[in-house]
Amino acid sequence: MTPDNYILYMPPVILCLVLVQWAGGQKLFSRATLGHLFVGTLWCVTFPLLYSWSYDNPWFISLIRNDLLMGTGFYALSVSFCALLYSVIRHRILGICLAVLAALIDLLFLFIPATQIAYYVTYWHSITPASLMALYLTDPKESIDFLEAMAGWGVVTLVAAGLLLLTYLFYRAHRLHQRAVQSAPPSWRQKLTLAALVLYLSSYLPFTIFPQTSIILNWKEVSDYVEETQKYASTHDERYQMLTLDAAADTLAVKAPGTVIVVIGESASRNYMHAYTPDFPYPDTPWMEAQEQSPSFTVYRNAYSSWTQTVPVLEKALTEASQYNDKEFSSSSSILDVAKKAGYKTYWFSNQGRYGEYDSAITLVAKTADVAEWADDSYLFTEKYDERLLDFLDTLDPTENNFVVLHIMGSHIYYNNRYPSEFNRWQNPDGGAATNAESYANSILYTDDLLRRIYEYGRDRLHLQTMLYFSDHGEDLKISHNPDVFAWTMVRIPFFIYTSPAYDREFPDRARVIHAHRDTYFTNDMLYDTISGLLNAPSNHYDAAQDLTSPTYRFTRDTLTTMFGQVQIKDDPSL
Image (cartoon, rainbow, N blue to C red; front, side, top):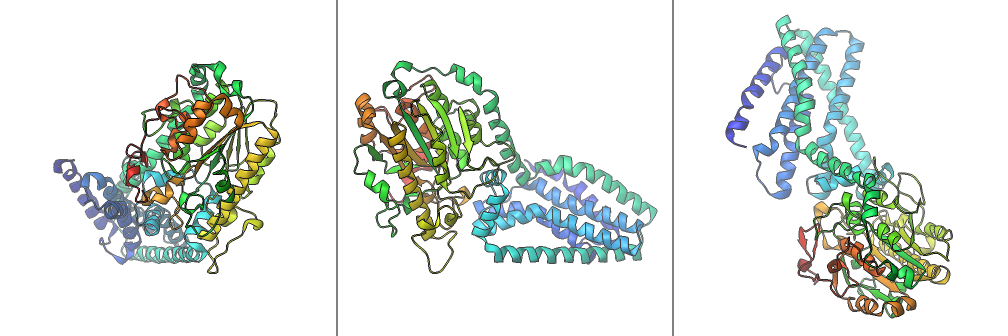
């Protein structure tokens, strides 16, 4: 934007402020209008300042023009409206009620900049579309967990007390404004000017300026994304019909009938798993470590997630879209589609909620299964333990070919809510059970035992032919998995594949590749192709170069990325 573009806005803004001061009878920095000025100023500077501090970039007027106009416009509108109202209504009780209402309105308009400030002092980073996405898909229960974990109820109580104090100060400012207006009532010309300002600003600000402010543009990016994902369901049947296997008679379901189980973990980081990090002080993966000695198990040492949040990660892991192609989620085939084509009855069993105003990308995929069940069939995060999913396995017919996805809560914050008391093996004498390393290790220990139980159930009762486990993303014990404050612990994930003796007999070459790639580098957005290969079900929507079970898998440490291409795996300081 050139100076000619934004200089055009300066005369109207200056004229508006002059008219407000003349018609309202109060100077710009009058004590009577400090409440309006405070809120307006925060709208002007909050996003530009926090963005500048986060990215060490200078202010660009083209980026923040609408923030400045919104803050200035709010000040002018609220001062004009209140002055006009206070000049007409002089009744004492009504005046008090109006002052209370005006104070609450100020507090309401303060919510957006205050939320940005609270986020910044928590993470030392401005809000981004990624963090807004998490907010968009967060339910009330998870919000409460987050507040308690990151701030604690003491801080929450102090914030609540601060808001009450601020409301009172707003109220006092409005009472002062009332007295100032009523002691020197505006003339009919001033009232007419105030009315004109109110009419113009109340139609211009909400419909023209507010939608173009920085924070709302970020929010719109998120809502546009969610709207786009909803197309997945409406076009699914057509996509499914177009999916064609290369050799339907050679799939795993035909060659070695039985059950396939995919377990999706939550917030499990290799950094805090003894199987991957032997110097981690808590032996929290005894079963996985024992299976590493089995020729049927391959525990991959160098797996990474493609992002640090569940929905964006699984949107790619479950479908053919990845960091390395230009395919969109809404037009992609899924692992459930491939499994159905390969001859399986598909199941999705989840211990996570169907959260959000709309179905998330995960739920949209899950609903395409022949059977989809949630431990808590609601839009809330559950506090039921993941072993609840074992009950669903009882509903499977062992004589059929079953493809089962189990989505667990794993080590989702609060860690100490994720396991029963018998797994509370390690405690920290300093407390902080919700987020400390000891509770996290207990949650990993519980997941390790759950994986054992799932495997043994499938092996003993369901003719288990292959089982795959991976985590959606990792976790940092200080800052969880916020993409705005990236840490490598957030993307280092566990990953293993089990293949049965029957599998190894029918597909000896693939089995050898699976084991040979133990130390190969991999990101979980390529799981769609990997699972297609595992099922021996290549199709017209399959890329062997992204299939870890294929000898033509082409990626290396130097070519892989995470954070959707923003970070190179070769830069991991642990390598």
